[in-house]
Image (tube, rainbow, N blue to C red; front, side, top):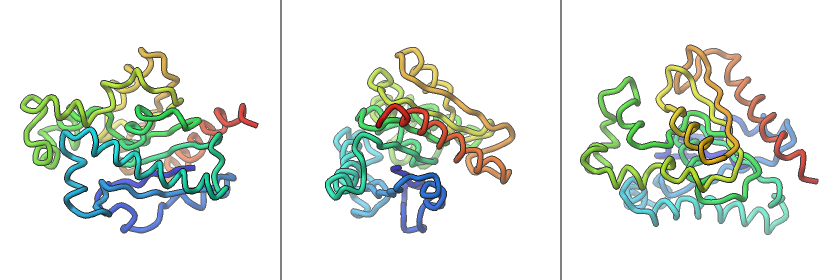
Amino acid sequence: MVDLHGGPGNGLRWGRQPRFEEWCRRGYAAFAPDWRASGILGIAEMMRTFLPDVEALDDCWRDIETGIDALVDQGLADPTRLVLFGHSAGAAMVNQCVISTGRFRAAVAWEGHADTELAYYLNWGGGGLAFLRDHLGGNPTEVPDRCRIQSATPYADRVETPILLLAGDHATADPIKWYTLLREHGATCEPIVYRDEGHVMTRPANPKDVLERSAAWFNRWLVSVK
């Protein structure tokens, strides 16, 4: 189980992933990698990941992948039974990962944007997301190529991994475009929308449901692997 943190700024410096014990209770070995978008390699590398730099996004994925490879080499992870989970910025990274690799048996993206233009216009009730404008050097109309590079949606045809999309109906991430494109390109994908919930859930039963649904999704695709 590869569990990607939110933020991404500061990453794991906020503390351990809150779901670790739950994954372990369900029989998974859990791994929480960090990657350069958190600032772990310094401000310059963190800022580069927000720019129209394909290589920087690839480097983020390589940061994660080298950690997985190390665990596989040590015999701590089965390369045929890897699954991927993320919330918020971690879920956005899940979306980037599944357009880069098919090594995961299944993935869950909980509240992660896949389209930078939609994220800019719809987050926090609309009005434009200031930090995205600052980092991209303009709004999506002014810098469309930069938004495209930062989005997973243009590359939906690359996705081979079954992916579960989770979001609240008052959420900051809109999964509908991503879901629609994935389905149009033949990817296996299911959306789940939680009523009266936002980016951070407030009803105690719903985070538990996220874990239950995610585990069921993973087990569904792992069951065929001996």
